[in-house]
Image (cartoon, rainbow over all chains, first blue to last red; front, side, top):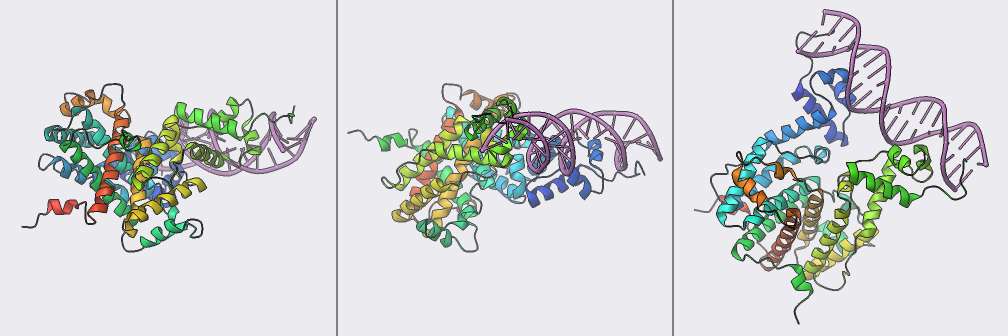
Amino acid sequence: MARPRTPKIDIPRIVQAALELADERGDFTLGEIATRLSVHASSLYHHVAGREEVLEHMRAWFAARIELPAMDVGTWDLAMTALARSYRAAFKQHPGSVRLLAAAPVHDAATLAAFESIAELLVGAGFDDRDVVPLMMSLDNFVLGSALEPLGDDLYSTDPAAHPTLSRSVAATRGPDRPQDRAFELGLQSLVSGYRALLEHPTEPATVHDLEEPRP
Amino acid sequence: MARPRTPKIDIPRIVQAALELADERGDFTLGEIATRLSVHASSLYHHVAGREEVLEHMRAWFAARIELPAMDVGTWDLAMTALARSYRAAFKQHPGSVRLLAAAPVHDAATLAAFESIAELLVGAGFDDRDVVPLMMSLDNFVLGSALEPLGDDLYSTDPAAHPTLSRSVAATRGPDRPQDRAFELGLQSLVSGYRALLEHPTEPATVHDLEEPRP
DNA sequence: ACCTGAACACCGTTCAAGT
DNA sequence: ACCTGAACACCGTTCAAGT
């Protein structure tokens, strides 16, 4: 039984196994993927060039799942929020995989096209040319950081004696909504409002140096 | 020459070697660290319990380098911006190490103390109890995302024919300041302004649902 | 207490052999 | 074209031996 008539595995199956493993224990091994697919590790090399390419296919899986909003209609702020939400929604389905993929995130053709559209909207809205790229970077940084959730559930083990206010604040987030979801929405809205302010007052927002060193 | 009178290596030297290697090629091997210190890999185990503990010491190195601003004086917005800048400044010194450490970021005693102070300031400023933790998470997410710089230098290889506006925007960022620095400041100011707005208008900022589905 | 060098398990990757 | 199984290099980790 060396070569089966119909191939035992294919790329979608490999990606699926990798995603499952990454979600379960934050990492995966080619051997683990192979076992899950009832195959030997060396068989994988008939479908992918190596581990790095598995990661690449995982990124493509996410990219395909991101609904790129119709960019040609609507305003820059709606387009940016929609794109950010879409990214985050895709990442949320496989939280354990984000860390693994963060080393070289999704920049396929469709994503670049979305960036081009956003750039057009921003330029059209009247933003300073030098700010267009920083604005997109800033939002991208925020979305990735939100997906990684660096604080995780750490705060939930806060010692009430040592950090009473923090503990009380953590307790106050009990409820149906995860604080990370609220954090994402608060941050997203704040970023976009801040960008909007920049448009209305080109020299705003004030730097904190102004606040720290008030002119006498 | 089995045991030298004065130990050939110590934890600071191990951490230093690991940081250098991480910056140079984004990763490190215990063998590489050992070679750099003219020692065998197995010698490292007399100082650290294993690779994971090297990473832990690297995190401690960063934590020690973060200047925690005096939290008891000043307002919540100054404290948060100062803390965010301080984190980012520390990460910027060793950009290649951030990825490696992102899996389980710094949450040592000093950082927790800083979080407690921020929580106190936020509560004192009158924020909704349920928003205190999300606000801190949101900023933390942004700082980590900014340190990781997911877009990296990718945008600089944009094809002008395929993405003309994006290319022109990228070209517009040429100059002494890195666009990522501008991105960080823009985002930081925007986040803090957004939080401030939340304080003044408890129901703000408006959700995008309001914008997407205007009441008829 | 601390370095050495041999050893082991594990992992990614290669390749000849089989169909 | 695709699976197998043996093989190799590399890496983290352990440990007895040495001082």
